[in-house]
Length: 202
Image 1: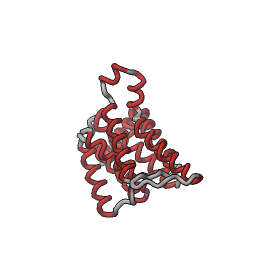
Image 2 (image 1 turned 90 degrees about the vertical axis):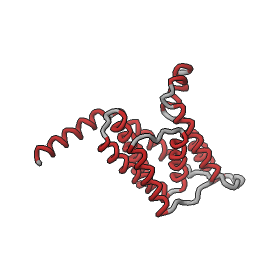
Image 3 (image 1 turned 120 degrees about the vertical axis):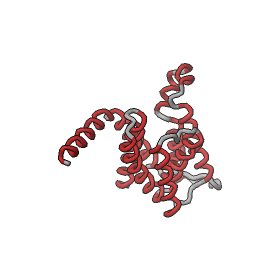
Image 4 (image 1 turned 60 degrees about the horizontal axis):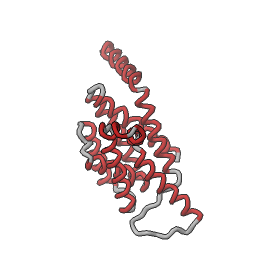
């Protein structure tokens, strides 16, 4: 459990850094470096947890369908994640749950930074800014997993219930994603300072 907490937090933190290094600072080296570290964290989670595999594979497919895989760090990360999953395999996941997570991730990406939605509704703008569709999906499957402990829920072929703690892990991922965004400028300045020192040493 402790490792899952660490890797979900690191994955969220590194994902946001990679995105901002690419989009804000146009720094391919840092974008790719943090992206690769992020995908290693996600790969560990996806290989060792069926819940994580369902969530992150859904995110991957959803982003592909929304044409949001458009930078070098994204492309390399997808190639590496796909390769690791192919080599090590993934736990058994429910196809219905995967489809729902994929659809949720796709909807979030279509709505995120969408000017038309922002003009129509400030509530929906905030909703998609923080990608709540997938969070709701993960919450529902986690609640079903919790209820399954106490109630004999009917088994539906292809429907996967998440562990109750999965929603906590996913919220942790998102919290550290936002933390990285709020501290991005200071992190970037710190890294630049380190590189300047290293250049002087060389």
